[in-house]
Image 1 (spheres, rainbow, N blue to C red):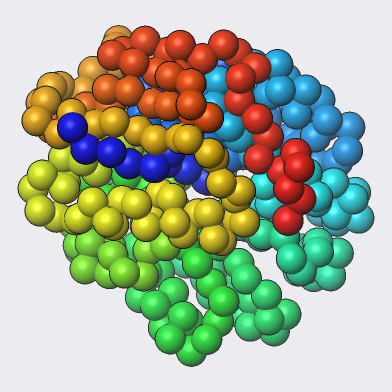
Image 2: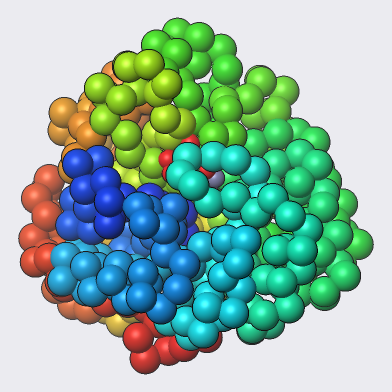
Length: 355
Ligand code: NCD
Ligand code: ZN
Ligand code: ZN
Ligand code: ZN
């Protein structure tokens, strides 16, 4: 048996409110526990999106009643909500900027709205962004000009990880995360899946992109699932929405990579505990840990997952390393395939601890 601290996934989509048929706070946080994750940060591209005090409070009330693990909730940046968003900054996980088009209605198209958010959002609070390619370069310029930290979501390309590496070397306060599907799948794997199922944003990348991520592990601050559940009906239909469920398969995939000597236990702890805690000022969870049976090997399979959508792009993949037990604040909340936490057990990590 090996032990980990309660792991943190800073990028999940729990779909509540508005798309509870895909996921909700209870199922998504039970899935997190099954994956050894004791804190999740929920993204704001819900329906309606989380943009102000009213929409934030509505989502926070649902989370308070239903979450099985601890959580934070991001505010979304829109063209005209910089002031409204800043008013709720104390209670939010951070501000999410959608700088490229992806699933949902949020997108900052105008330079003036970027400026507006950088002017209003408190300097002490995190800013995270979906920013690919030239948009990433533009955001790094903002980080430099405003001299404030930005965190880049789901980095997937060689050019991007190398640009972030260079930006860090030059003192720009940038951090980044990579998603497990970009570490463990390429566009070649995507060709063997139905095209709708392979759709994800950013798209699956080339082998050389994937290799660049592994060669620059030290540049990657966090590993985050980008758990983005859509039903199989949606994925297999016309206009499949982008996204993969992933919150409960991330740690098993990393444990398996650890068995293959591709990364160390300490890398997992850095990227899913130490760095997220530091970057987002997340308070300690007392008496919290995860127990792993590192000898147990099994196949990942959709029907056995806790996520409502019951599928995984890693269907049939054999992994070694099973989450046996999860303890939060001294209580066993997951054991041998069973979620034991009651909905509402999870706490908002900002409740007593505004950044
Ligand atoms: C995400 C979703 O479905 O909300 N989809 C995805 O492919 N990653 C949106 C996002 O994170 O860009
Ligand atoms: Zn995104
Ligand atoms: Zn994102
Ligand atoms: Zn996402």
